[in-house]
Image (cartoon, rainbow, N blue to C red; front, side, top):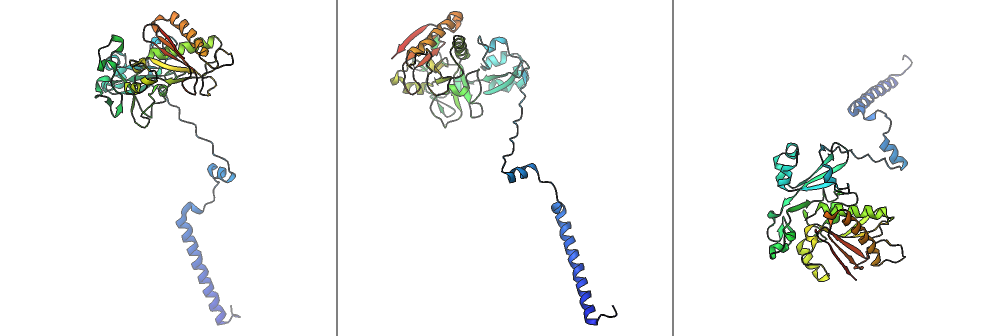
Length: 331
């Protein structure tokens, strides 16, 4: 230090002071950042993003359905039914229903999904909205119209329905059986109006499933069946009377459906008799199956109508469970 001039010494002291200040500033910044400057392994999302690889999708949560007793008869003669509609009276009579869901549940339209008899098999108890809540043509903003017995005196088979299944975006895809969902039976109108309302009889779905099983047993592929028309509200039915619909159509009572067998899912009736043509004779295959089922299960007798193509879907069959035999054909 003795060899250094006073000027040089002052410079060295100044530089040392600056260095000390800089070190202090760096330490202060590091302390403020906390763990921000700590090096860590990148997470999997960052690695996937850099590599251009999509992250694996999370598995959907497994929903455990509450166990509830379901009588064997509720699965229908086909064994494939997965729902039962309940009026207030039948909800009260169902063992365990009030104990499980409370008294308010018998007055609140809803879909209660359960694990049938403690198994993973889903089953839905559907509490209906009473018919008496309809005001004129409308129920909660959804236009239904007036049933024949509201307009003129008719027989017992044409009495007003007990109530309606309330259809919402949350339950519209509810599975009713192996081949059918609730969406299959909604009236084809008022698409943007919710909730919608449907009348539906378990016996119809049971019969359709029995027919499909019978067709399969006779060598017909039945992977997919399409409902062209299920429930038709009277208001909508009145609009299609000019197209051949009956004014007192069974579609208004939830026990009729116009269907095609469409195993290859191309939107058209399949060539059921394998003659290389798509015509009314293909519906005869369905008719023969229906007659076998009605002979075996006379409680499911009803009407069968065979129709030539009325659209791009080709010929189709009307099936119902009206309680008496009826047959017709329209070219």
